[in-house]
Image (cartoon, rainbow, N blue to C red):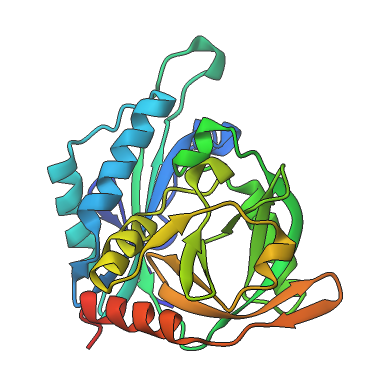
Length: 279
């Protein structure tokens, strides 16, 4: 797999793509990230991703070393250097090397890596994780580097033969999938968890809500228990790298629940593929 990487705007070869072992991103997971989809060198929803990035920087007191327009240029250059038509781009901004308890920021590192990406072609199977997320944490609103729960839940899901994991919050309410937001259709009505459930304010989530209205669909933010989710008509997920993908199965312990693929999921999914001009 070919990966094209830049650090602070400069291309680096494999083996030279390194940062200090004393960077606080490594020591304390202090930093931010965003993941972009690129098609034919077009970075999908870049403006919205960067807006969230800079909002997150204010929350954690991280000074991003370059303005958004310069960062946009770095992103575009990195993607254009990759030969594939469809790529994923990971942007990581570390907090830099400094003594944590001094309370001063070191020199942040801006890391961009473009790699091949294949869009999902079939519905997802979700494993319901035992891990819980804190719905009241302000850090649930931004994409910090602290993703241990999500990483562990995804690993757990893969071992169970599933594509991803569904996470509940500490109130046992449906929150999100480790790499996506979740939606369901019940009696013809479309729902998604509110941000107060602890789900990430996904870039694609905001656009799904906007675009659904154009399709004559109203999305209602509503809390749901797992038992409630198991009784609905359709389930789908959204993210920058997946766009909109149906869910075919929910696996709870040793029992697998099948979910039909319905017309609303297909309508929203097809609309998003046209929206980004998948070709």
